[in-house]
Length: 200
Image (cartoon, rainbow, N blue to C red):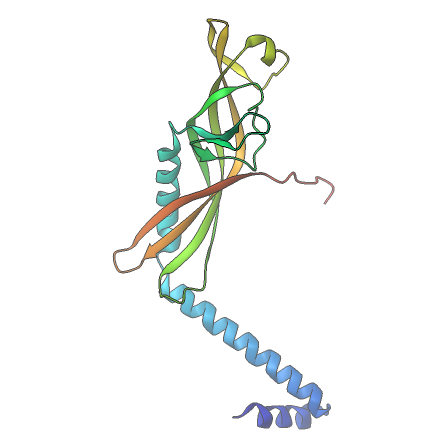
């Protein structure tokens, strides 16, 4: 049945204006299209939910040992190679040579989305909350009063190695290969967790 005929029938049944019935009919058709698209998406990606926990865990394990990328100097454009944590507040002003020691994801926080893919590549983005443990070197005098920084290796030529843990949100871009049920993840960045308001 055409949209016009459906709207006329609805207008007659409900005793409403044709323009109102037409708008309601179009809204209903949009909802039906969205439900159909969602069902097709779920049919196309039935194994994503089962693959993502292992893929995220593996990606987190592979982060251990990586340096933190950052700009050297206050007004410098010299980039120190490493993983970007630009959207996370780290003590880069007092610690240098920062390295990721361990990343423990909370797999219950995984969420994902699939992009429109005109080239028929199954592209998406996945995120998860994780506890990331870092180490870095700094002068004990500069670190004084920072309870979040713990000493790993005391004074070495006037410096000491410190460790700290931050709870952050990590994201990866992914390509899904449904034929062989495989995901390729590429690190996309980290961000601070938004504080929750206990009054809501």
